[in-house]
Length: 217
Image 1 (cartoon, rainbow, N blue to C red):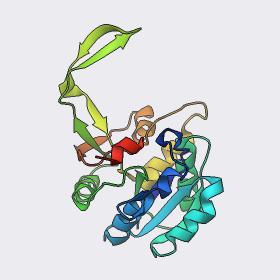
Image 2 (image 1 turned 180 degrees about the horizontal axis):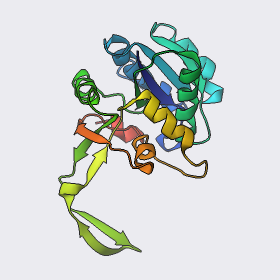
Image 3 (image 1 turned 45 degrees about the horizontal axis):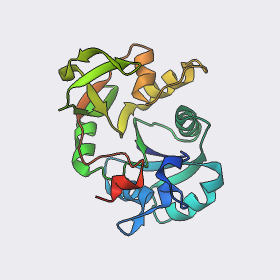
Image 4 (image 1 turned 90 degrees about the vertical axis):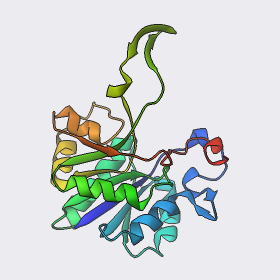
């Protein structure tokens, strides 16, 4: 069984809207619903778990009722990694024979089937696969507004979600991650334990909606 986890527990304060970002109307439906729609109709995903802010759990449950793959809305945690671990722990306790788990930020509503195909194709032979975008810009390391060095852009990528993993590998790494260690994505948890993370081509369309200007163009 393959399970998609949608993370929708962030505060979204930079978005600057009275409406929580995940429920902001984008092309006729809430931002989170774009991801729910795609995962609902993608055959290799069997179930969906959504993680929501505690004060938005009931509203998220109401929205997700029309998606029969969505089996639970889990309370989020203080940090992104805490929200992920809450979802993984629920899956571990309640679902048998989980093969792959896909972790996705609800704030990325423009994913498509082709990206999912690339991820699932690669994860067949690997424990962890992430989508990345190469940089066309020159990249520099700076300190106190002074350039320290120019980085080799051929070795630098921008990382996106969804990221896909062997469930047991990801859960065990999260379970063993020191509580005082903070990570910004799920691949970093495997990197902490020196496990290989493979890359596939991401999508320039797969932007993370942070500000309202991100969806006005």
